[in-house]
Image (cartoon, rainbow, N blue to C red; front, side):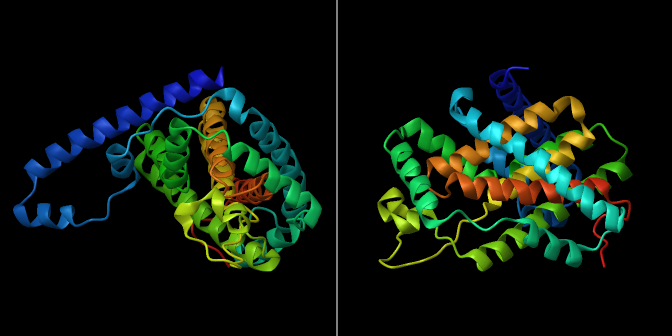
Length: 292
């Protein structure tokens, strides 16, 4: 399936889910008491509501994201090979603490200074090609690519599942995204690689980086880790839509380089982390959310 068609199709999915949410909200409001309605209005907006209020703009062309998409595919093969070792030793039991420590060990050290400087130059060159439309797309992907997009896709899947199964998958995805954040933060604290815009503040004046500031650290990419974990799980649950999920993941990670949040090696490392986490949850036989 052509990725561009896939992405356009996803817009329709987002629109349908958002419209359904709006209808449900209207019916639900008219059927509840004023007190219940007041309580509901104070509830933190979910992913569906957030995307409904901020619908996606036109995203990047296939040609723009193709190289990163290929790198993500290559990392999946590497992750699957590594995870086979974990599985051989631990089976399908979940032990989040031990798994976290193991994943941190699997993430290679960041590139040498010269190689990372060369990557920074790539980001600087890409920044010179930015357009208003590209910035709009990248901003939307940066905001919603950490979780909203993947939660919305999971919500869409649950519409066609038995309630119990849908609830289990919701917990699995939430746990995978949470673990992605925790592991990337541990690796970032270990390797202390400044984000491109910290090295060159002109890349993101809006970040207000001070002279000599070392953080925030960008190796590995949290967006890439969350996207990879989500793609593995969502694709496992709905294989016929796996290509669509991969296409969106490529959009998310490209946006991070486009806006100087990361260099390519950050993306590769984050993708490795996310792929391992996705395999871990897909393999787990224990109740989602339960761990040692």
